[in-house]
Image 1 (cartoon, one colour):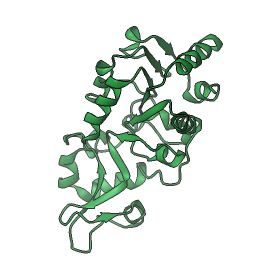
Image 2 (cartoon, helix red, strand yellow):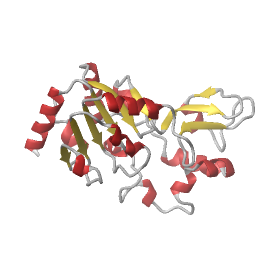
Image 3 (cartoon, one colour):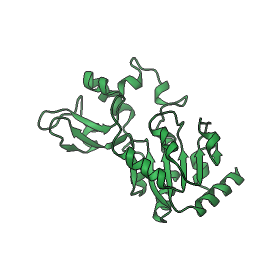
Image 4 (cartoon, helix red, strand yellow):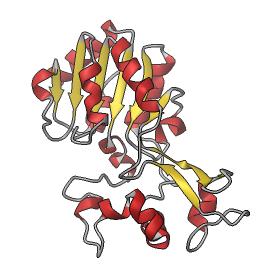
Length: 238
């Protein structure tokens, strides 16, 4: 582990255009459950599978059921950034990290101070009326009962990407950032969710690093693989 940290630090020191791509594992140390691990949301028992509840079809067919799950499981307004979020914000401030690409919707990268964040799956911090497009703060959604309604009478929808919906324009910006980078750090992701996981195929730089508790299908093409908790890794970097 010590040698791996040393090697990672050397790669960071040598690089000046770093992109970070993170999955749910980035936020688990802030107390937010991931989806696919044995303790993740997708392995909890519900009468309707979480993947179904988090689909566009279910949102429109059973909006009240969607919001019951959403308020219960995806409210992370009280969560705080962990060592990984803070390290990345510091690396950006140094001018080395050019952007964070995240699959998370919790807004913790921005809370830690990161400025350039591409949110591939949207954010709980943005909510819009599907009728008049008026913006609503997340507190309004999480503190309301039943289906949150706009003053115009329309249903308010979180700006999160549900199954069956298109990814936002951030995906193209993220692809361009990856192509221009000299180092890509992938962390806290099983790299099984496409098209986000396909971002690796756009990398043309020198160093590809994968940090994850378990192995991924992309480990064989990485310059460095570290199978450990993100907190253990990022707390040792300078």
